[in-house]
Image (tube, rainbow, N blue to C red; front, top):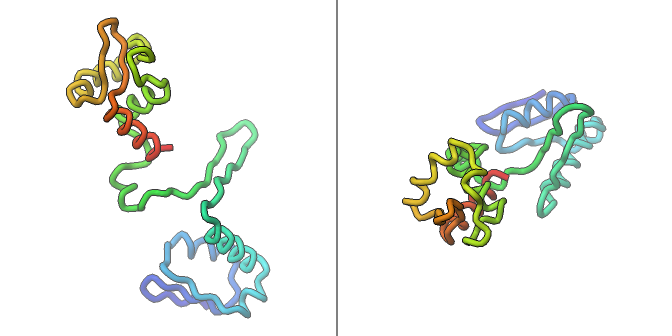
Length: 162
C-alpha cells in the first residue's frame, strides 16, 4: 500500500521498480519504506542502495549511456539550484554562445584575437552591443577578443551551461 500525504510517501507493501521510479518522478520530499519491504523486494533494495551510494558521493558521477548509431544520453547532477535553472534555462542564448566561443578560442588578448571573419552573421550583429558593454575589444585589423570582465562573464556562462 502506498500512502501519500502532502510531499511524503509511505510504502508499506511490495512495489515494482517501475512504480518506485514513478514515485521518484513525483518529486516527494520524503519516502518512508519499511525495512521488511526492502528485504522482500530485491530490486527495490538495490534501487535504494544505488540512491544511497549516489547521495554519499561527494560528487556524483556522470553516467553516459552509449547507443550504437545514436546520440549518447548523459545523466549528471545539475549543480545549480532548480529555481535559478528555470530562470537561466538549460542552454545559452546567442550572447552567451558568442562569449563561450571566444573563451574556447582563447581570444583573451590582441595577440590571440579571433578574426571577425570566423564569426557568423548573428554573432557579428552582437559585436557593437558587446563592445558597448565592455565585454569585448575589436582591433583595427578586425579581430575580436574578450576584456577581463568579458572573460569572467564567459567563464561563468560556460560553467552554467556545460
